[in-house]
Length: 146
Length: 72
Image 1 (tube, rainbow over the protein chains, first blue to last red):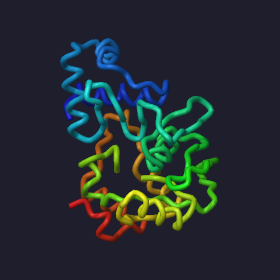
Image 2: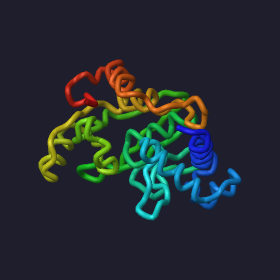
Image 3: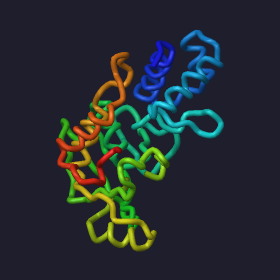
Image 4: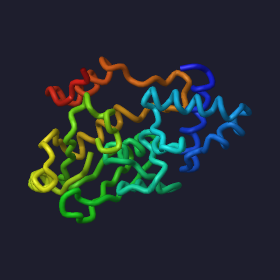
């Protein structure tokens, strides 16, 4: 990973963490003071390295654990309501920002509302179960489904 | 990776959507996994994705040792 890619990665994650915002290539180019074509290359490099996932138009879909689009896994902190693409990433956002949080989601089967609370690094839960159907070595064949 | 009310709800979901029963674990284990995977600051220039060996070692420390969690 070259210096530009590292700078782009740092900027992307800072934008998600601080502003709950997925920076466009234009915004990243302006922030880093570099040409947009180099930013596109950096985004592709990060995607090839499974650090981010891009949409077909080149915009960021996820910078795991953060999602750039609305999802059924909402992470409420005192500052933002973030989105994760799965329950692992939703919990990952809480771990990454390091604050208390409430995760709002629904049961994958019946649709009943479920919430998980994290206070002072401790998870309060009611016996819910996490399930993943795709074996680990196949996750990146379709990371959004996984 | 979805959250369910109970194991019975996982069974119903797998049957309805014709999905294999993969791995199930508690929300508490998922929280430990999330902390192990995502607590590091990805803005840090020293941050790197886990290697396959590191990732499998992380799974193992959490008790995820079946073939399901193998990465190669």
